[in-house]
Image 1 (spheres, each protein chain N blue to C red):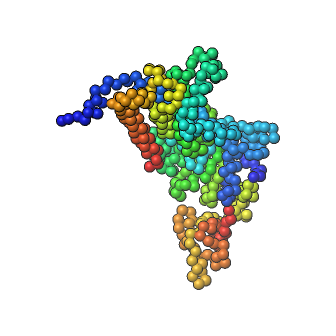
Image 2: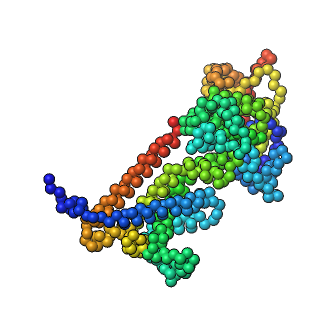
Image 3: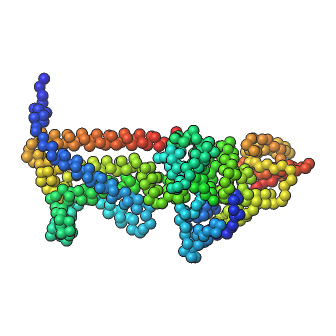
Length: 273
Length: 238
């Protein structure tokens, strides 16, 4: 793995790319849960890792939040206790109450994790990660297991929490909607390298966008004589579209695309992630 | 109504409860001490970074496959005051380990080690790695993580280990006979008492001891498995 990038403070970076590219490993190395053979990690003025000088700050001292794919809630503790566990001594317990309220968990405070739905568990994980008021939140495919409605709710919750207290986010995701909705920067990782980094527009669209842009995913593909008809998942709904027949070779079920409605014309672009 | 003469003699038997009490005293002390010893060993086997883990695991498992008399024989040699280890213990602590209760406790700890270590190790291994890592990213030390996260979420495994160890110590015979002998109130545990009664052709007394051991160990195991089933059912996601 060979990676070199820096990120402005208080921004959201989406890390995407094929599975096995090393996204989770990179996240774990930033968190201090895995140690790279050699490298440097600096956050603001703080050296977190510098293998050349033998510096390796353990995860406990990096002041991060980490959201695991399986949420990693402690089964032996209630929702409230999961949050309180993250408190350090002499830190305000009011914050726990406030986070529970913001995340809509006040009613569920006495439940155990196994009594919660996936979306509720995810909210607990998010609230718990913020109890320490981290300046960097690392999220490993946090919303992948949720249905689209719930994904939107949680993305909104994340944005709401960031409005209250800004922090930097690095987020592993495969969801184009998530990238465009949340990310200031997107980085594509392939075979242990960052192949592209920039704003979602720069990375996926290359040029300026005027008009309306939506993104979609092909569900079915049908050819009737000269017309090519697709059913696609666009903005949370299934829609039917007639598209230019020359796109047939590029469009398959699962293909992601953007649909750009400009002044007087519309254009479809196939996305390669 | 006529009572079968054997049952009649069983009822008539005046049972000496000392061996039974001694058995449960030995099993309780062994299980508690072994729990304290086995937790760090199991943790170390699962999370420790060291070479030669296979050797340690094989050594811990030896009591599972060796005849108890082999273990008893080597312990008898080591504990004897003419051996350096036995002499050292006697010099330093004033303890004689052969034919004494303390010696039985140490022998039982060694003999039951795998019954405590293996289930706890399996319990720790079955926990998702993310629980431990989540605790670290929340700023908690390794010790806090062990006490507040890992152990509470391994309760069924720890309970199983404790009870298996207890039951295994109750059922110990060969090792006790080799290093403890047959001193009433000191080393004469129930399993040895049964053997003595049978040798003396006193079958009703042997039967009484055996029945009590059978009933108590059965009840203990039954309790544990029903508690564990309940704990595990609670943990299943709704």
